[in-house]
Image (cartoon, rainbow, N blue to C red):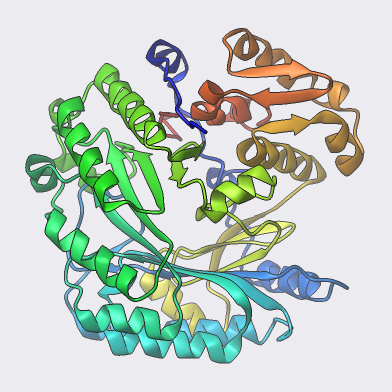
Length: 463
């Protein structure tokens, strides 16, 4: 069965405008500092006291990197001082204890992810120490997905062994682009040989789920140069691929100012890069999951998509629907049933809160009933790529056509352009619509009208 998708660039041009990525709804710009550690602790108690509390997803933010990648939009700390890293791990231990003591020990962890930063920048013994602390405080399901983001640069055999020994079973590795000029400009020199060495090292150790990250829209990229990178990636044969759009937001990430506007592909070339990536990968039988994600036909992401069990949170697409997400470490964003809670992004404030025995929550948000309805609908659209209006009416106790009259009106021109189809009380997203799923979800976002009145851009473009 072919999974090929023919990309209409002219259509992409018409819809390429700023919009949220919907890793949450409402989105992070709407979080408030009036929601702090006290409110978060109260909500943990409420959720934990439910008759059947949700299973757990844990995220650990390890912010340290040896050097700065100029394209990066993550919350990072650049250091070569190993004592800073050791100190952070001490405080992370404190947060683990603070969170774990509030949670019923019988609640199972079905998903764990280490991100950053560069989690593999930890020394092998530090990886083992942190994981042992986590395992001693949380109860893991036997089939838990346990994943880590790695940077091949600086890794040794001992790192590979430590990652396997503690129990990671999924690997995600940044590549971005193999072109030498692109790598030099973004300050990330990473050879194909090194990438293959780490990839093959994990394969030989039994890892059967490896994701590689690419980025399109980077400085000096051309369709021809990115084609060469794609060919080499396909030969490596990862199980999953994430092909992200470079978001040039120097007003948010000052270090991106070193990337000159003139070095970036223009809008037309950037969309041609996307077209080429989607068509090349789907021609090679990768399944386009949605937005940035591709997977081989037998992957669990594809299975979850078929069974309508796909989920989306701050780590992107996931197969674990309905978990409480507890994020630990500086800047981490937790997602419980009714609230979002984000840790402080400042290390001194993070340490101060933990020294005082407080959860290091800096800001957050408590969902209204309308937020919950709209989050449910947006999540269904982003994950199922269809919407059963009757099911939403039953689940949310609403009259769909009345409640979302404005949204349905906004969807009309998108339907006329072939991004979606409406029939028999269902909205079905087409292949082209999957590429523009953020635009479709925006029709249901109650906050965008207010966002448009604010000064300065809040979001990157949708493509």
